[in-house]
Image (tube, rainbow, N blue to C red):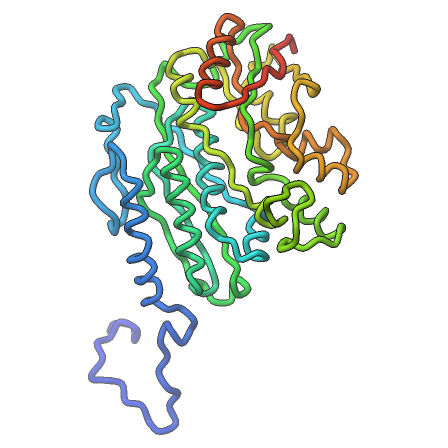
Length: 356
């Protein structure tokens, strides 16, 4: 005889007068209809990021991408994943939710770019206790904008409504990107790097998405409000200034990579210049950075002064106004600088590679 759980019921279960009322998923705090409305709202945003290589539409169990249609003949895939960290707390405090999605894409896309890869497609994970107030739509609109800025397609994602997991108005984000690079263009080209190679810095837009636990601690100790004036940006509130999204560098840097002039690329994230720049170097070489070669933007000057943060700690925690560092040969430095200036950048030579 089959175990009881597998027996076919003889008929409908009858409830007596003392039976408990039936429950639904909505009674447990999950609104399936709200999730469906969110999908309807964000689908046009995702479709607007379509690019060569995307196959099919949204709604399948997986997303398809045709590398040949994207123009690759001998590709190497490069993947990355990241989040936004405690910068999300500023979004909760201020009610500004349309920029952290850009941060999410940038933290992933810039990482694969450091391997020489073009970001091709992106997926997100948005988790919250309850879908409410258009928050998810604003966040995902930012994700779509980040994808547009980086040239990658938003091909799917997951929205998880989990009652009891998050306080009202709070959520968490994770992002996943896949990029590709032709085999001969993979970075860093450690075998080509040599003593005297020039380090060229490209500016950040601010702290990007790193160091915000320290930022929040300084703001709290100073007794400041995110809705109040910013002590380092006259045109913005403190919250608006600190929520300035991370820059996306792929459209700017990919032509330089494909030209063969870039030997190495460092994305300056957690760990700052101190820990990230050496990651692109072979063991025989080390970056020598001249901290006097650029002036950190006002946000970093304020954080250091208000927090009493030592200079070494600042450079180990924040990007100090530098989002990317390129390693190029001395013979190519002038042309790379010229191309960056023509693109509207203010690049700086900040050091060179030296024997380790």
